[in-house]
Image (cartoon, rainbow, N blue to C red; front, side):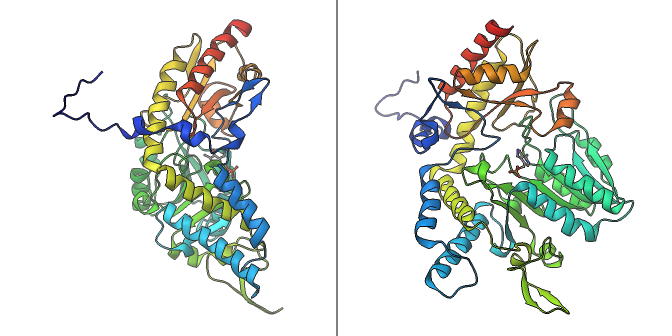
Length: 422
Ligand code: PMP
């Protein structure tokens, strides 16, 4: 304990020490339930996060008061719905420090955003013999759209390999960047390993090689401040549902110079300036990429989630989660028979592990009986499983409302699992 005197004030608490997860936890109604007679311990935040009361209320209020189609009507509800929708776009711009709201495109989620870039930017900028470079830790949604583009164009997919800790081998990455590399697509934070990639450096190298850079931020935005200008990328994507917002909404941010030159991904209403049977003139971005009636309630909910994160404090969340992950790492790896998969120096919010002699699904099933929700499986990252020679891992993933008590319960339950199944 630190001793202080009247003339020597106590040092200010660190951001992490001052953070009170119990205060924020109370805002999440879904967390206050019992599963199989035990209090829910929710550690599957990388799959989706729960929603705080202000987000639930914002979506409900939208449907109760403002529901209308956007951009079309002159009546009051339509004007209000449009204001809410465009207000959410402005909130996203601030959230990722984008230069302009016009660069923020609402989509269904990270998956749709990547497919949009692959099919729109990719189809015009990638040709036969060109190369697309990804990393060995990508989620399937940052692999398959590029494979499809390669099939369509005759381009070649290259993959930067990982070391045994689950970090990209930067020398290899640099070697794989050639004058044929048109697109580099990499995750900010790995959903299977927790690795935080050195995106600033990797984007700098890629752009120096003349490639456009897409960053998959699905696992980054809920956990740390993100500044797309500082990252130096061309596209940044994420899903609302993993960041305390609703399902079915996500964001593609793209640099205006690129979006301006891109053709539409889908055709329909909203994305046109004029239509005749002879010729259609497309709208400017972002409308050009938002064909059809958008998920207005989803955008409104995302806007509320962003306000909520700002209120909690994104730097404070990052500091708190860093400390909680360090605590969880130390405690979980001390359980007999546990081996961590993913031991990068820079990690965020994710603890993947295997238990010797017990299948990950069995661990998940036993933990569920004790009220604990973790994920077991390949986490839509089968190449990562292949790289580490395991069929599946158990994954505990953290959010701002998790506590040391949650980790202690997990550790106790893992030890019990070993007794029951080991
Ligand atoms: N990228 C990463 C790193 C992810 O973790 C996920 C979701 N697990 C996705 C992309 C895809 O997100 P969505 O399913 O919301 O489109």
